[in-house]
Amino acid sequence: MLPTENHTLHSVILCFILLLFCWISSATAHIEKGSMPDSVAEMEFLILLEFEPDNLEVRNQLGMVLYRQGKLEEAEREFDYVLQKAPENFDAVDALGLVKLKQANYQLAADLFKKAIALNPADMLIYYHLGQALEQLGNINDAAEAYRAGLSLEATGPHKQGNTENRQALLEALKNIQEQSGLTQEIN
Image 1 (cartoon, one colour):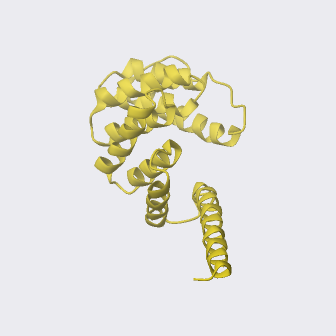
Image 2: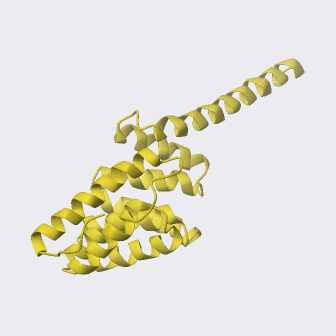
C-alpha cells in the first residue's frame, strides 16, 4: 500500500467514526422525544451500549423501554446494573419500583418509592407511585397521605406541564380512595 493510500484509508475510517458518534448522539436525542416505537428504541439503545456499556442514562432509558414492552425481568436487570454502579440514581430506583409494582411485589415497590422520595422529594409523580403500592398493600390511610404529599408540591420548573398531568393523576387517585374507603379529609 502506498503512503497516500494509507492516509486516505485513515481519513475514511476517521470520518466513519465521527459520523457514528454523531449518529449515536442524535439517536439518543431522537429516542428521548418518543417518536419511535419501543422495539426500535430498544435496538438503538442496545447498539449504543455496545459502544458505552457503562452509560447509565442509556441503561435507564433501555430499562424503561423494556418495562413498557412488558419485559420486566430484562428491565429489572438494567436498573439493577445502574444501581450497582450508582446506588443513589433516582431514575433507576423509581423505575425499579415500577417494575416491582407491576410484578405485584408491593412492599418492595413501596420501599423503593420511599427511597426515591428521599432522593428527590420534589418529584410529584413518585408520590402517586407510592400511593399505588400502599393501596395494593391495603394501607389506605398511608396511600391517601402519599397522594396529599404529592399534591402539596408546587407545579414549577421545566416539567410544569407534566406536573399538571401528575397533579390530575394524584387528585383522581385521592378522590377514588376517598370514595371507596369513606375517608373524609378534604382534597386540595
